[in-house]
Image (cartoon, rainbow, N blue to C red; front, side):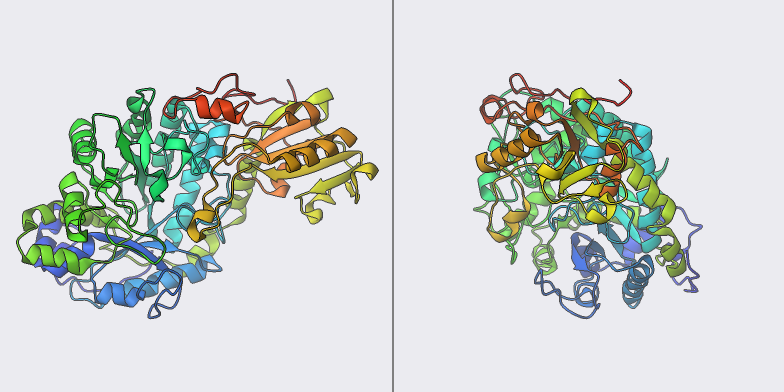
Length: 585
């Protein structure tokens, strides 16, 4: 990637030596502080390396590397360009080289190629190519297309030094109200299993190596069956329930991921209720992590907890569901006993060292996880060259070909729900009243008018409804009712009654259409699509190719009556999984 003139000082730095030999040589040289640092995976931002992160109340990157010996970081935010991103990463790696053993940093990232902006789940694309959300890839339904997306994302990640994808999210969307459906492959286990295999191949290749990005599948054993659709980031959403006795269904995509060679796994915050498994959060759950993941599925890769299980953070209390009564030290021991290797989002290396010094934590158990973590760094080639080429990053990240492919995928994911009287595709030059559409793009196709009365057609882009939460971090999680508020439904219906109307709904969750499927001239479901991507389809430059990745429920009564863990369980849905019209039909 770049020239690295570091002289080989230790046997573990000899790239010609077998990896297992290199691991054992380095392990023999690590002191307890080095080992402790490896077991923590926390957040950093692209900012001055010596400055604390004021937003998240975190120490500087330099302090985390030098004082806590940490070298696994979840990178938040972005740089304006691929070049600046790469230069920042190289500067951080140089800081790590200042320590005696020169252990390289492994940088990870939440998804950053789509449209969602949630600091707890994903980020806007920034300088990277922009693609539909995972739901949109599921709407396209092609494992080959998913593998191609992952291959593009891999190249852009590699160019700037991102080596672990904190994704794919392969939970199943069996509870329509859940706020994190957008990042899943939908409701069907067979489809999700097919797509996750392509996703992992695209990021990792046939074998994990120097040109791979490691994948961390989440959230084992499936985070979809959330009681009342609430999310376990918050105490009121901590329970996962299985009224249909359908726990096994949610394991299917994870079995497919393991068969495809996934390198890492993340358990969710939730705690299973009313099952054969311990009623504690999955990160603490030995019956799930050791019993299911390690023993039954034979997974020997890295298990990293979700963020913030041990100590309180400035954003929220620790998510220690079912073990709230335990001290932070006891929680740490329970996580390790459960079979996990890393503590996500934590900084308390001193606490781990106290447990080792007191003999409460056996060093042999510590070394089991240290070996796994070192093995991946060696397999990714980070010890041989952790640096990236800033010139190459500038040419790879967001290049025109990748951007064009992402735009095409956005268009192809669009799902045509209704098309009364063949309203679509629209003719160029018509008079259009529009809401939620950038006039700069629309003017390329039509004449824009100010009111529905002046228009030949109205185009309305709206988002799936939700009940806003105003308590800080909770505001990013769209949950609650799937019905449009009555005033908004009346407003949209009145426009559709006055002029032929095309309604595009951003389906971040399954939506109750409230009869608009009958009053609108045409309805489209989207899952992350720019105005340019949408207009190409509306005006016939491309055909919509997407199919629904979940059912669209008829009513909230049907949602409430359905079983949280069972797919396709709402009575008489408005549209079924797989529905999607074509222009040439």
